[in-house]
Length: 544
Image (cartoon, rainbow, N blue to C red; front, side):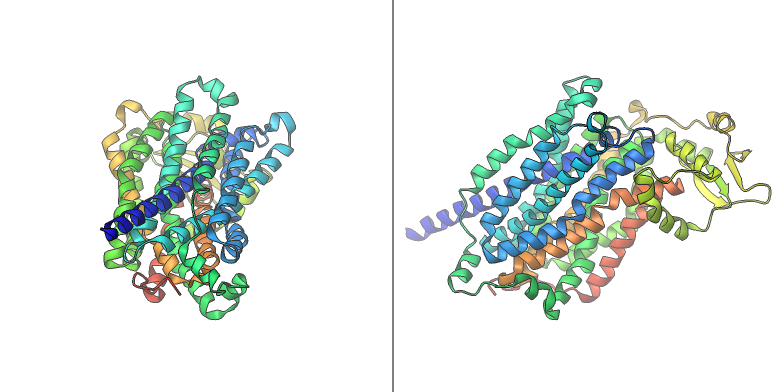
């Protein structure tokens, strides 16, 4: 009779561990992603007015800034977690995240305090990134070290689900807020409400996490005096472990990061900014795909316990490489068929002497992004003026070499305009039929949701098993530190800057699909390196 009682108590304890860790992480991801979801608003509110493209890129850059410091948060809090313990470390991280997010909700805008508005926003965004850098490794390690043998993939997949649920929660709160007030009210003050809601979520998270005990694996090691005295040195200064960190970064987390952010965040920007869907349609379509795709995170976590982690993650990267271009072309045809028809019927081409080939253009777009972001790099050349004119009107175009007649020629179907002349451009483009916005009546919602769900499937394949894989890759004494750094470089740098890099490439080249070559290239790199150098980890003993 005693065995079923112990088993029931164990199951109850496991459920509390997973629930408390996951719920707190959901709220932390919510805090982080409401900024990304509202990024289009921040370009107008917190940066100098006058250049909408620069303002939008600035907001994406600041979104990326939060990710850029995540590896430093991983080092700081990872070290604390390996020295002191998992539980108290991610209590601290959630407090920092919640307070930083709430303060964004009361931050004065550029119109009120000028230059100090973007500076203050940067500081709070950095605090968010540092906190999230310490949160994920602690939650994933804590859950994995509580998981029964053979169920680490299943247990940690609930942690993986939290990012998607946090994104969904951010969309739901923002949608509800926008739905309950006029567009003018939301733009003026209503955008602050989702940030202030984080105070309530913070209180719930702290209450629940205070009920948790320390990880049994870490507690036992600490009782035996076997914890690391210098986790940073052991993790990165000893070549054997440093090799594992590099393999995990380039062979797994970099590819996982770009697949995650391309499948969710970049898809959101593509629908709203490139295809010009209204916010209501965009949020509902993304939310539907998140609901349909979220269970696959648990499925692939469970499946990785049966067949292994490595090849599931690599398969997700390979599928992204092979299908991203056709999927996003399909999104255009399904979400804004008028745009797809205009692009096919009357393509717009800029023939310019500045053209140096697609690879050079892509590198130049990324290199020049910082100048465009802060609004210091002005479009002084005729090509720059023409590019800005087309981008501001949402008209896709292609760059091509100049012909012999002029240094710059705009070609619209059979019409050619030499040099840059706004009125002549307007007259040439008017008959082409490029829509100013997507027609809600023509949106193929089933088709869009199907394609977005397919992107979510790839996300689940790479993201569902990654936490268990990283936990199993490193020894207990330095696990928090070692796993956190490659995860947050892969997600924070390779993934977090994806919207900015991809948008910069699109703005520079005019090709709405050109930005996809960035995630495709990174996913291809991870597939090759992972296939050659990553070990399978599912049968590793984590009590080491």
